[in-house]
Amino acid sequence: MNKAVFLDRDGVINRERGEYTWKIEDFTLNDGLIDFLKIAQKKSYLLIVISNQGGIQRGIYTLDDVEKAHTYLIKELYKEGIELTDIYICPHHNKTERCFCRKPQPIMLEKAIARFKIDVNSSIFFGDSPRDVEAGNAVGVKSIQIESNSSLMNYIQMLN
Image 1 (cartoon, rainbow, N blue to C red):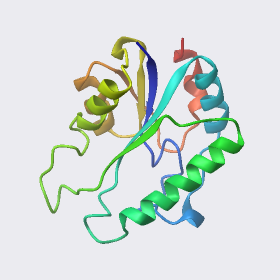
Image 2 (cartoon, rainbow, N blue to C red; image 1 turned 180 degrees about the vertical axis):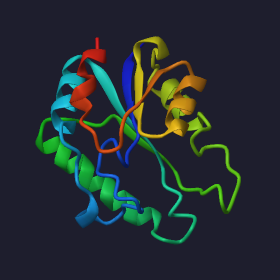
Image 3 (tube, one colour; image 1 turned 180 degrees about the horizontal axis):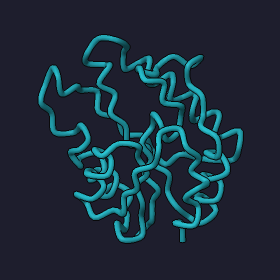
Image 4 (spheres, rainbow, N blue to C red; image 1 turned 90 degrees about the vertical axis):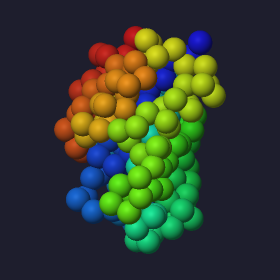
């Protein structure tokens, strides 16, 4: 079984701007992220992003726009020797459609847990919203709500 660090995107990985972030020029990595992920990776954690991207369904940006931002993220982390295991997104928005994958529903986490044979008892989910914590708790993963745009290095002691 593998252990994983699950990460919400906006506010945890990149700066939460108070509006949708889908343009590369608006995608700013939060302080401490690189150091935290290097340590997590060294401790054999899989690194998995779990993100609601409701702006897709609302027509604000496209799936292609999100994929470009994620390619940018992957390349920036790779330059630092960090490899993301996977990125899961929900393109739906609760104001326009009821779906089963949008957090706080745990479907994205369940898919990752099954695919990568993750031990939920050895894993942790960092999010900046109650819905992140609710999704993680639903699958038995220790879930921590952090302040948006804060450094994950404040939580490094939580990694085994």
